[in-house]
Image (tube, rainbow, N blue to C red):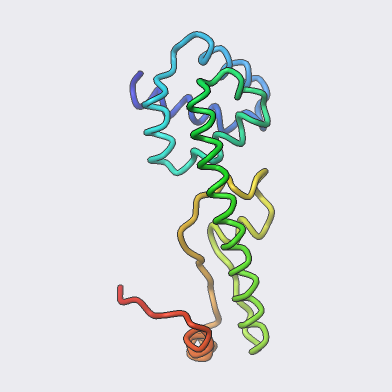
Length: 157
């Protein structure tokens, strides 16, 4: 299976919730033996969507069609990511509390903002590695001082 075909299949998998006809397309492709599972895992991992794929398969009744070892692998990754994201959300709440107590209104961006918004079906769907926030420019020196006092460190770029 070519890379473009793998990516198209992954895209169909990720859009099953919004386009119910895709569920049958995905099931048909799997049942027809058309999927290179090694390529699927490689592409899904490279695009940081393996947890979201597992979640979509689970919601749409596709998991029983997958090889058992693949289902176990995807479930494990999704579980680990869910635990990590719960910790990240707790850290966001702590950051928000720390900054708002000083009169600073942080705006959480990208992954953290989307997790906080409740966009995802499952908190484990989004792979994240950091928390992006936007602060009013005038508040940055105070925020930096507070963050350093709270144990955060500055890493050089």
